[in-house]
Image (cartoon, rainbow, N blue to C red):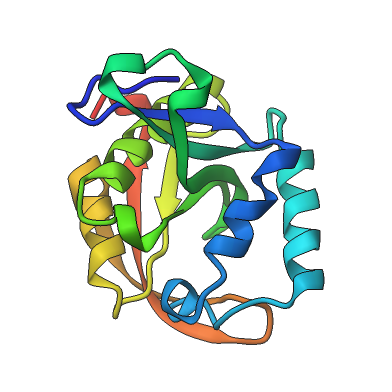
Length: 182
């Protein structure tokens, strides 16, 4: 899927070769709001889950940025992050959840917000759940800003467990997938 934004952001289905993105995103800087870096074994397990998630129950994507003059050339694309959506039960109802990570050298360009809008369209196209949620930490202004820019509505504060065994305070951002294009 390709965006219509000025930056040529594409979502590509997660593949075997995307393990390097997990490694690149596993720095203390990138994981400070998520409980810290994972072990190599945890990364390998996450990668297997992402590969298996290419179904009607969720999908993971590589965020690719292409040079404008060669948008369709695979070799001109650069992997700059990851994003996906997966099934959850939230407040007793089935829904989608989304999350993303953009490598530090590509942050601040609107890439995450563009990718989030593309994931909204992907989740909407499944016609499976009415709502898509994002739960950024309250102390992560960049991710909360992505939610705002992508068209999510702040529903309020919430506590959730992530990773398992670690409770954090976050914001519940939601978008009604039945309401039309954001």
